[in-house]
Image 1 (cartoon, rainbow, N blue to C red):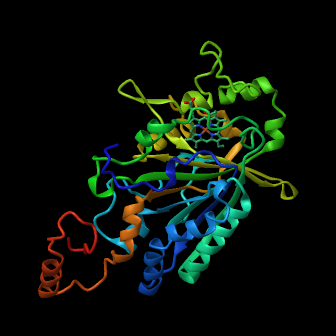
Image 2 (image 1 turned 90 degrees about the vertical axis):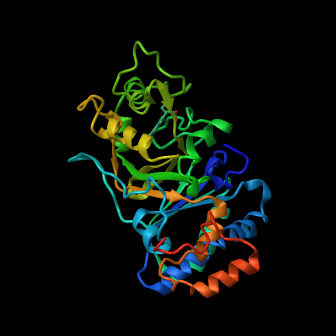
Image 3 (image 1 turned 135 degrees about the vertical axis):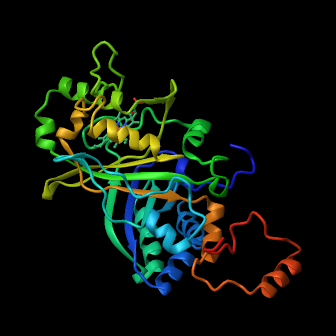
Length: 347
Ligand code: HEM
């Protein structure tokens, strides 16, 4: 990534022990849109205010917007690969799309910090948004998910994580941004725990205790790790996952919140197609015999620099008269070329 790429949000922050995932819809009306736009400029300050009180707890927040919301709130230009969540599969094995205009992915090593930041964020948004899904996730022991396997082992790290997740010159207006797909899965844990450890290992493609990958000679082509390993012209394409376990034992709810970041939605969509439809079709992911996706959303994550500019991007604002903008540019000594600030729908 060149040095002048805008600063990304905390997409590549290291694994945390706790997270809150909030999906919300934005109410209609110009006044509500104004609240959300101006909130974009407050995010960094809110994270600082809460995070500074516990500097070692690694508090972070990533915020993303869905395709319809982007058009409504910010207008053109729009991120090149932003589109509504694509569904895959059918019947009981279906990756479904569910409503959602905004995603908040709040992470920290202590849940109290996630809780405080989520409260402050939602407080500022007020009735401009309705929360349609809220999940409080935790890491199980040695970074395991709800099905008991270590989750995140094959994630890219360091420069490689940025390479696979952060948009660069392929979409210059949105460089430093990212795409994120979320799905909330509920597991039939009684049935899953009824399998032998060996059967579970064949489904995931790794040993349960040691987390070592199964040898190719015994790893089925329908294992989760096989179907989610994809390549582009012979080069493996990775995504960055920050999945979390969640649940309520009293309600017999046991889940894994899947969250995957990439610099285009395509690789994550390819993985979902392999899992739900199969590679080849029919050779599907047996994890789905024990897990059901109950939500699905795709969001664009602006860079931190763009987040700061979004409060000024009202697509319905009356365009400044030619005289005004000439005067403004002359006084700033700039032609404002190449800046996203002040762009209008007609541009
Ligand atoms: C029920 C939900 C899911 C569970 C419990 C789950 C669990 C796991 C586990 C335990 C691993 C092995 C360790 C690791 O490398 O992280 C893994 C790998 C992986 N998963 Fe998932 N996963 C889920 C959903 C998904 C979805 C929806 C996708 C993508 C659309 C995905 C993509 C991947 C990828 C890319 C890998 C690494 C494959 C490799 O390179 O070996 N997972 N997952």
